[in-house]
Length: 255
Image (cartoon, rainbow, N blue to C red; front, side, top):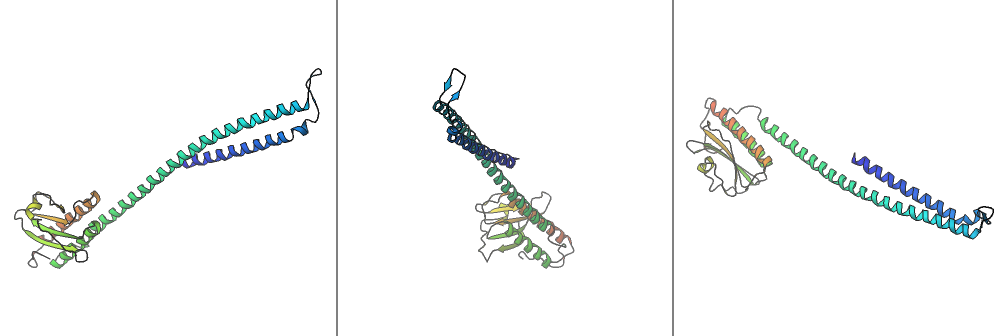
């Protein structure tokens, strides 16, 4: 609608400009040819005769007055149209920026939806062996590094009663140095913050375990936190399904 208004204002401005130019040309032509039209004296009535020079002077003055009035009217209307054009251009720019932001947001949401879909639909089967579970956790750890811009991530499965580390997986970018000093299981289960780290945990009151994802990053934004939580809960679910199967082998503390 605003585009149409802007288009109409531009048309009106051009029309007004054309009208002014044509009117000015007509007036100038009339002034130039006034002496031709008035060849001799002009008889107003039988008793009064107006000389040719006087008629020309009056006519030229009248035409110049019309030209002056039209010029002022043109300038006034043109100024008004230019102000409207600037305002509509500014509104159009704001609208374009908002539309661009909306497309960026929609694109971001679509990416998040694809990520969530790949997370929830990633493993085609539940892990039946230690090796399969290890591969699933590695898959999710790499997904986490794809979501969060961090050098490394630690996935840890903790017994909530014993506070012991049941399993732990470390994943890094280009062999980055992983430092987890000061991140104790007691601190994690107590839901205490650790300076310089972001910790996302699966928290179920009736669960014997807790799965946590640790990043060397002070804060996660809302979108990152949502996706990391989804992955963390997915790992917890896979582990509970895995340990509910008949045991096939002993489980080491690290894998």
